[in-house]
Image 1 (cartoon, helix red, strand yellow):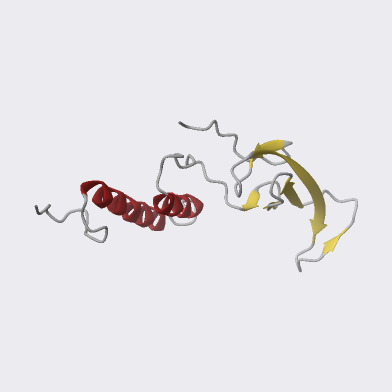
Image 2 (cartoon, rainbow, N blue to C red; image 1 turned 90 degrees about the vertical axis):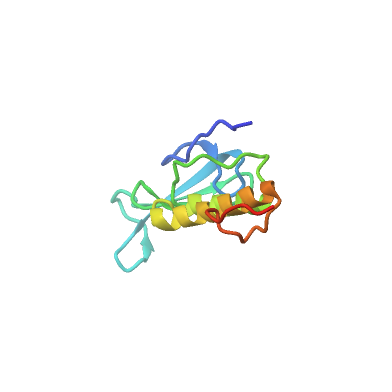
Length: 134
């Protein structure tokens, strides 16, 4: 069954945490960071925001007003019924899709290969395009 997804947005009070996958309240803290990475207080508008998940304590960073970590992926979360090793590959592919679409596709192909071979009772290292042998 699919979970309703509420993607993280800048300064939202609550959203699904990218770490624990729980819909949780978020605590925000804003600062100003200079070009050398030093944090300081000023009357200028803050350009670094840190939010902390109230459920697991995971930190997310926005710079400036965009999620810098973790990268926000519009790809749906894996199904609960998915095997754990396949789910791990799926989540890895989700996490890099914005940075490397080709890398993400390669990981998804590996996940599909493992899953298809497992369901067919074949060796999981067997390539997808190899003919089936009885």
